[in-house]
Image (cartoon, rainbow, N blue to C red; front, side, top):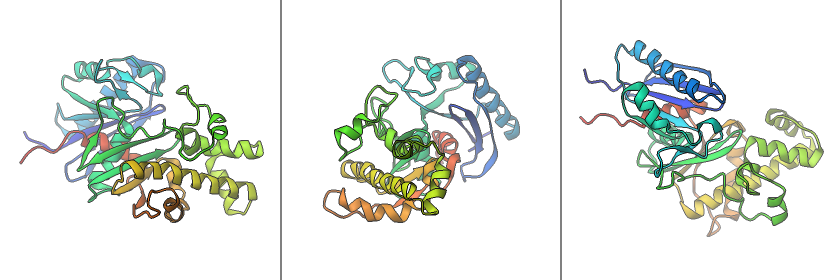
Length: 306
């Protein structure tokens, strides 16, 4: 029987989420469980169990499955690379999932899933070229063009977080070592972790992003200064994207994107760094929040042709 139900899996470092999604964007089932950290075989079987749960509710088997991961799949080897969930690296994840589920599984980076989700039925709907950035514990991004994720021959399209922050002094860059082995990556400035680090460097005190924002709203000078500096740095990072890609819209996801102060402030700051001195690019929060990744994974399987 023909169906337009599809299953999306978002494999994160701490949680794994599943959604059963229909072509009209209706969700039938969504749940999340803890990811078995540092255990590859248990991770695979967690995914299989979530797929089985979704199919049981759908009353159908062999539904299309898409999987978003915190890394990418090498076109050369078919194995995972660049995953901060390091137990996935070097593993033939697409092939292993195919063997366990008895069908092809579409696998891509979780930021590509965010971009795809928001392009299809989210904040980027109706725009041709969507750039979607994750500002969370880390910092990544994906690109969707006409409702299709752009991946590239190296699986790196939109891999924004591991480029140095533009228009930044060498001293500032060198003060931000990154887990990738380089210094001054945008992730070390623009992630929630990077924002907290700026406050530590300024005050010596460790606080959460929520605490920092509350202090800034209460008028604490150090917190206000750190938040203003963050906005300036985020404008630099996004201006670099606009100067190269000039997307029709930029969608922000991840915990930091929930700061409402971002959205009126960035349009004031971007023209200073965008070539030509003006910027008409909408900057908007993700409509589906932290569910965008799992929904985008489901959308990796296109609707059946009519």
